[in-house]
Length: 138
Image 1 (cartoon, rainbow, N blue to C red):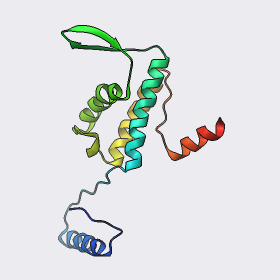
Image 2 (image 1 turned 180 degrees about the vertical axis):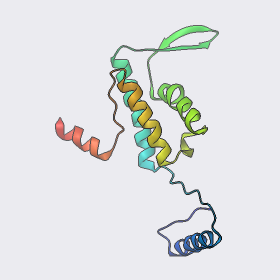
Image 3 (image 1 turned 90 degrees about the vertical axis):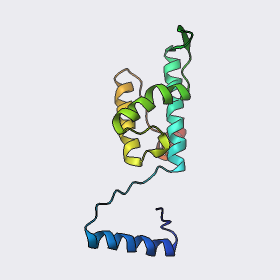
Image 4 (image 1 turned 60 degrees about the horizontal axis):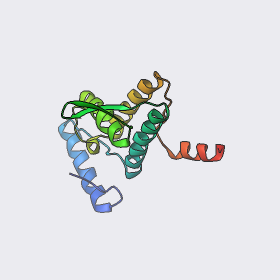
């Protein structure tokens, strides 16, 4: 069930559900889905990684066409499907990025930052703060 915590009726219903769970000693799994801004930042993150890999002269080796190896430039889609999703599946057994909560998203981002940092590629997850810093530095 979803509750709009800006709506008074939903707040009352939510509080009632919480009170019931407390009274009965129930276990509760409360996840916070990522926001639209986080979703946009995630896809920008994929693009930033792809651009850095391409700038370093790296190419993705694709073997999906009749078994032949084909080198293609990195794109946000390649980064998402060939790097992000396998890590996501391994860490959380979740197939869709839309099913990640903020905590899970941050855990995978930390793996990416370490993995690419170890290879000399410095990536920072896009945020309002990093956007403002980069625009004022230029």
